[in-house]
Image (cartoon, rainbow, N blue to C red; front, side):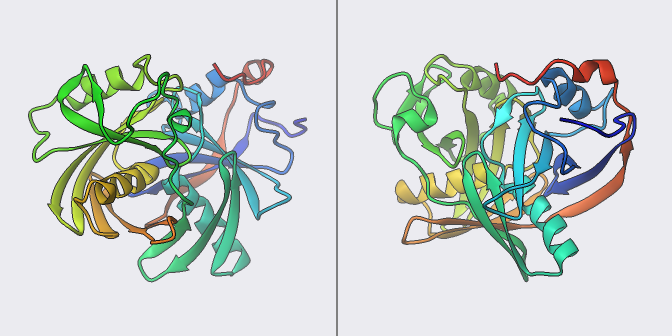
Amino acid sequence: MLKKNFDKLPFRKMHGAGNDFVIIEDDEIEPGVAFSRQQFESIAHRKFGLGADQVILLSPSKKADVFMHIFNADGSLAGACGNATRCVAKIITDRSKRSSCKIETISGVLSCKVTAKGYEVNMGRPNFEGRAVGLSMEQDLSAIVMDQLPNIEGFALSMGNPHLVYFNNDFAGLDIAKIGASIEKDPHFAQGVNVGFAQKISDNHINLRVWERGSGETLACGSGACAAVVAGYNKDLLARDVKVSMAGGDLFIKYCANGEVFLTGPAVLIAEGVMNLDSASLAKPYVEA
């Protein structure tokens, strides 16, 4: 249980290609016990809180250097976040003076290392099973047709969390926010879904926008970039090594022949400080909706 004075809770504000996070680290924090869902939402709020796409809680791990819990801007629990993983890898490697580390999540243990291009994360292997993306019925995951985009087939897969990826020559005329929000909560996907909109530039380069479940459109999405490259390769559109250009910057994805997906990109410390919390709001435990 919590023992410290949470009127002054230490935090870091970091970003990976514009995907920003409030990171809270404490050996005494027990994620799922200390904070309410409303508290996560309050911290992430861009007017009344510190502002973030996700709130990250770090606690001790028996399998890795640290256990990372990821909470979306609406307080819901996320299974994976490649950009947050790189930020946490920076914290660990800077502190330990090592060039590699391991980070445990609810989706498994991720191996990370420092490279010339930034921080590299082994995101594991994609899962192409319907249950992994929360589909309510069995269907071909490579040819998902939704009412919101009836003329384009989407490709569904999980990279620790569910993604639906669309490829098209031009998404400029589409209302990404409206379509993404509608598909995210479509009853076909029991757990909600992240929605990617990819435009092929070449076999080794795409532009990508991602609507993230629980957070809305973000400037970058690491697992979304991985999902887009995996989908593109399996649709015979892309090579295995691809630069993914997003509004917040470029990420580099390698989809290996053994099925593993590597994500490389920046991790930037914005600020460190303490936040003031209303202790009354900590009384109700976090319960996933």
